[in-house]
Length: 378
Ligand SMILES: [Mn+2]
Image (cartoon, rainbow, N blue to C red; front, side, top):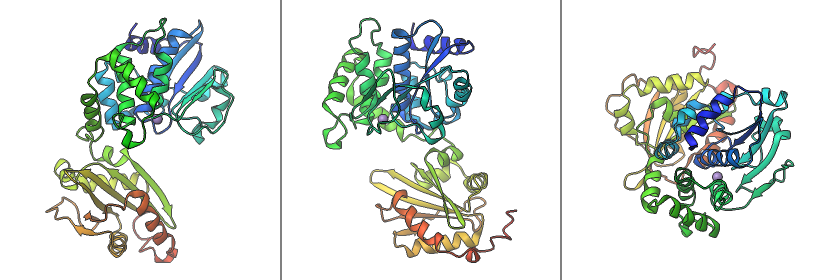
């Protein structure tokens, strides 16, 4: 049985009254979390599963978000795993399973449940992870926690050399691609790779026959390939928000030059407006970062309240982060609500800019909010 038929079979069997052994990655659900969960659940289903049990990979994000992980979209497709067959966190009720005493959890790529999932901690039966060990829970099937470059290394290590369930090339490539991406192509200078990652990767090369640089370069390129994403996707792909005093502010990190974005979507202003409205934001920033051929940063400032936008822009200009207006020509519906800048200070990432903004907005008295009550927000 191939991994795909395993997944199809799973979906049919999920109707039954079974013990569900969910193999689940962390909430950020990067490629490591997803690939390692699929590979390990498949492995456990063949080596451990008893009648009345079901071992399944559970992808810890809603199904609609999978397309945002563009490198995973690529690698799953390349290794012949049909994404339609994957089980996402919104396809299943962990609470129902727990209430029926039918829930067991294997934590992959994390060893502390997300706060919203802490209520399921009694079900944790195994942990396979490469983050710092928090020493939580009492997994009866063991805890494998080692500071290697990728959780996929630990999963592959468990699978290699086991005659009862030989590692298929598709699964081997899924794990190998993940290890390469996590260790920056096994490069010691990136300080991620360990001897174990290296040794496991060498074994996976033998099984897959994959070319190292070819696989790594393709994955790296796909990670930054936003061509399949529209403006709302680009805004939510890597998004964080904060309440800063009376101001609710969101910042999207976007991997695309502003000019390309405008070409791709002439209706960008309306999309910013809708996104800000749906999240009840006072201000929405996009921080664009890309390499072409040199690393560059750009900044988009949006507020439906033009006075608030102006105040934000003035503050950012005063902050000396090297802002220069980008000549965007005529942007449809731009009005006074949006501004586009190049950002000369490349060190000012979201992590660095956020505290500056927080200090500024938190120092405001509520009364200083321009027209807070007459802006049409009930
Ligand atoms: Mn990881």
